[in-house]
Length: 127
Image: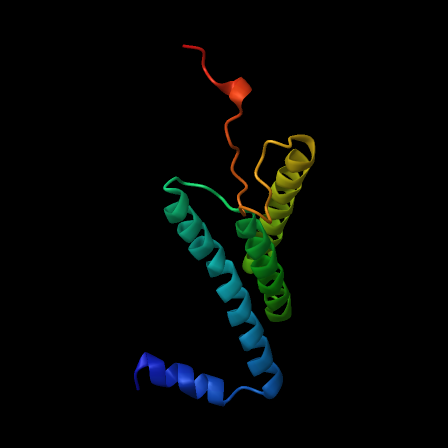
């Protein structure tokens, strides 16, 4: 029996509640992976390495769902990793939104979807 057959057999032997939680775990992993795809697309579009604000929202959404899944599984390794990550993602989102409220030169997330700073005229180096 190959490894794919073992996986299919294990899923087939699961209770409906377990299948629902497995689906929740896959959803969390999908959202978590989307943050990198979004970052890659925006960086390619801007021709620069940037972190769009959507990166933090996908990190928080995926991390929260994966944390729920980890709690259901009672997996201390995943619980510790995701809870630590969630704190960091929320803190970074706080910094980004606070900065946008204070500094009106930072791009509007609804217009450009960017969290990266843009240079201000006052930051220019004199010639």
